[in-house]
Image (tube, rainbow, N blue to C red):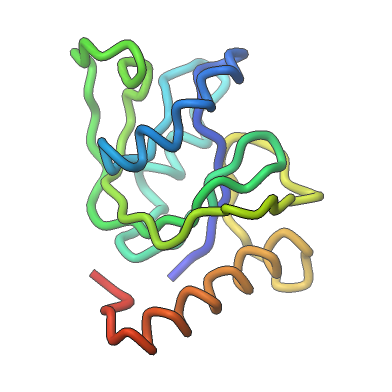
Length: 146
């Protein structure tokens, strides 16, 4: 299982990130658009991210939700919904927890990043959040994997 952090909004249109809560709740997806400078991140999203990986969604440095990947990557190019049409590359998710109280990732930069070093504060913050979710799920006998 890998840990990631990502932002979801069209290139240079941060105001679209206000829709993330609605997208997660009603569409149960995360995703990326299709842009020339994003080839590496899109490839990682499609090829490296796996079912059961954990992703911290953020708006800038502010955490929004912690989600778990529940399925493979797929493309949608004919979405008529203006709030989600820009999300070409998608993955289904389940929301594990919402950041109700403000949580900040101090070192988080970029659209999509895998947490590769345990000594980095961003990785520690995301993993601590996940550990709290694990305790809650275990207590309630909720499956941790899909």
